[in-house]
Image: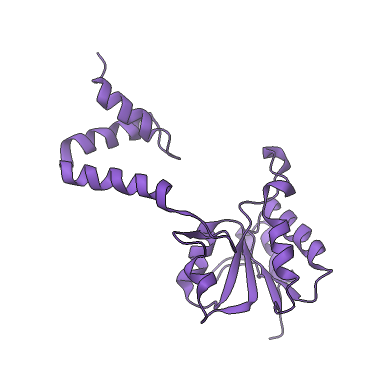
Length: 199
């Protein structure tokens, strides 16, 4: 015996989300039916619709926004001479939560990954180069992830930026505080050595 069609449809909808398998989707669907009242469900469905309807990418950096430019790009309090390059919007928000960077961002929309069919043309690298050629830009900080794809992307971007007048830097990667060298992989140790500084 199967669930009624309304529950089956809801289970199928939840299964479209990442990391949600059949059992988790079933549990969520039954929770919605059993525990949420109509007001909660209407608010939830409105929030889902508004995410797709009202949000788009900032025309300057690629961040999420409701206007043409995001709050960061339109702010006069930010340092528009320093651009931090990140792989995705989530990375941008992680850095913003630290409240230590006052520059602006550029979201690449991913990293070069030929196995998955993601090439240079799929990223916003050309838009970054155009921004970096602005004479007011003093530094581009490459903050892609410390993965093979992130490193490949960082090196490619650095090569393209060599024709610009701005300084190009890379965020340091390496051993975490409290980490043990015995448990670190080779790439982490290599990055720790490359990122060493005067002590």
